[in-house]
Amino acid sequence: MATLEEYQEYLKKHVSLLEQLGDALTSTDDRLDYTVGLLNQILAGGIPQEVADRIKKLTEAVHYLAEAERSKIAMGRIDEINIRQTVAAATGIRVEESIPYDCYIVQILRHWPPGCIALVDVAVGLNTRQLFPMDGFVALDSTTPIVRDLQIRAKINDRLWVQINNTDAVNPHTITVTATLTEVLNG
View 1: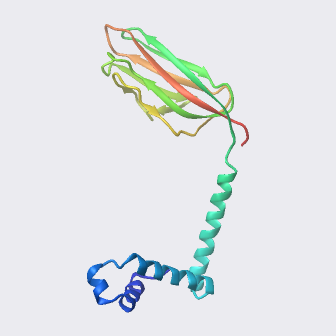
View 2 (view 1 turned 90 degrees about the vertical axis):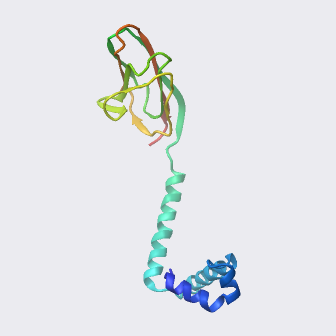
View 3 (view 1 turned 135 degrees about the vertical axis):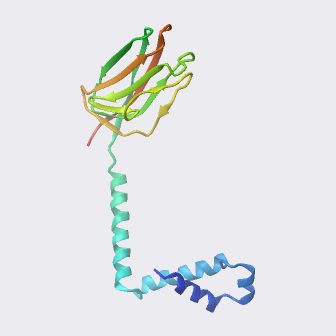
């Protein structure tokens, strides 16, 4: 609304030399007084048309966001698809599960037990799209990374898949991948 120069000019007129020495950034009271003055100008209509137009656009955007918040998609039941697979030494496997209803995948958990020592590659996808990692594979040891706050839309009968490649030439390994689904009730 006001330029930095206008604000600095206001401060020169309304802040004493003693206050300037004590607080180079002005006191909170001074900043509040200035802000209240600007708000009073807005209410009185004493602002340039360009500023009024910007305020109107901002107000419209706030109302739009508030309406979007009120009309969020209602969520129903929550289920999990759990894929737990033991993979023989020096082999790979792809496991697929069908999505039971229209939903969002809201979380994906992957678990590598101790002993995998970065020898077991894992990728997770939906239909033809690889989700985690975006491409290639991840191989870890003794960890359970969880990706939360996802909003991956899935439809009934879509295919959730897990590709596991065990590059350990001696030992089998068991990997777990769990996807949390939230049913879409409307939308």
